[in-house]
Image (cartoon, rainbow, N blue to C red):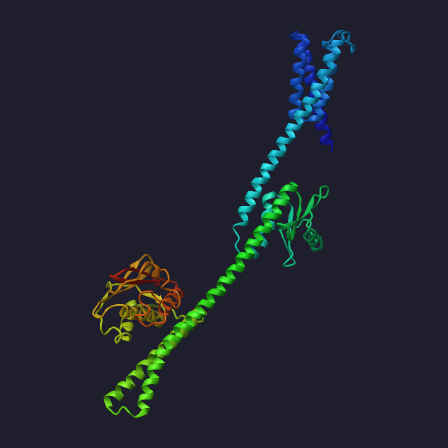
Amino acid sequence: MNQRWLLQFLRYLFVTALVGCIVVVYLKWTHVNPTTVALTFLLGILFVANRLGLRYSVYMSLLAAIAFNLFFLPPIGTLTISDSQNWVALVAFLTAGVLASHLSERVKQEARGADRRRQEVERLYEFSQKMLTSDRAIDLLNNIPGYISSTFHNESVDIYLLERDQIYRSLSETRKFKKEELYEAAVRGEVRCNGEEDFCVAPLLLGLHSIGAMGIVGNLPSRETIDALGSLIAIAIERSITAERLARTEASQENERLRTALLDSVTHELRTPLTAITASITSLRSGTILDPEAREEMLEVIDEESARLNRLIGQAVEMAQLDAQQVQLELEPKQMRDVIRDALDECEAILMEHPVEVRLPPNIPPVRMDINWIRKVLHHLLENAAKYSDEGKPIIISAEVRDSSLLTSVADRGAGIDDFDKALIFDKFYRGQSQRYRVQGTGMGLAIVRAILEAHGGKVDVTSQRGLGSVFTFSLPIAE
């Protein structure tokens, strides 16, 4: 308080000295007419109004009018005026000084207001950009109070949401609003500010609908900015909640689509071997087939279709386990050469019509893997290469070290895969459009391959050209 009074006293003293300097200069060193003196006083009044404010410029106007009358209007040295025209000049000077002070102060206040509004608009933009960094509704609600407090330099901010009946607060320990205060503001949709206690409670309005309220303490922005903040927060919260609902809806639709695709695919694939088995058993039981070779052929059909049926069920079980992350991998440093040899032995019957060429460098580093699951990866890739290639077309297995991974490739000379299918071919139950009716399958093989490799920390990719074949390449981290 004492410092403020001292500062005001020094300012009044400066104004008095300024008037005295003007009087001394024009009386002692330079003799000019009263008009020049009056204009000089006006310039001084405008300077004081711009730098110190209205009260000091009005004080200078009164002081300058007295000095002008005393030292520059006849009779000199008295406060009386002999000529009536000088009365007009004195009144005009005093009026001009006060009006100029008022106008200068008004312009100054408008400039400060414009600058404050500009800063608030910039802070509103900064705040809106911060809200875009949170996608989940719960994260957004937890972060909004902190965003407001850090952007507008408030002491504390509380956000209340009607739908959840919960308050989200900034980390400050300053005054916290009660739920009843925020609930009342949300229901009534009215802004309530207290300038003396420096706090404000405002609704979060989405159009005419209130979804909650916010409470701000310290360094309150303007009423317009508070309204804009409420609308921005309401829009951001509603956008985030709507996005989550849409994501859940899309996930539900995707699950339904996968369920339908699973039923269609599995039903079709299971029905084929079951039909063959049922037909063979019926023929054998009827006793009409007496030829031993024909009976043996029927038994082979039953055996092959049973194995196929068992394989289809096994793939479905594997896919379910991988999706549920219920697979326990036994990772050990193993040589890819051994896995390839085992996979070729397993696929000997499948690859009977295709020459297989293995191109491996002499010193392949070991890879951390579960050898049984990686053998299944190679089994699926080799089986696909055989199914989608014409008889006699070669299949090439190769490997190379790149960075800290071992890349293993299975190449065929089949029909190839178009760009549209390449983007979807690793999805569950998806089969290429041009091959789905020509080659039997469930569409689970490549999905299983990708899931197994991701569990190992690797990945799989395909390069293909129509008519020239495809190359499936998977990577696995090299053992340290």
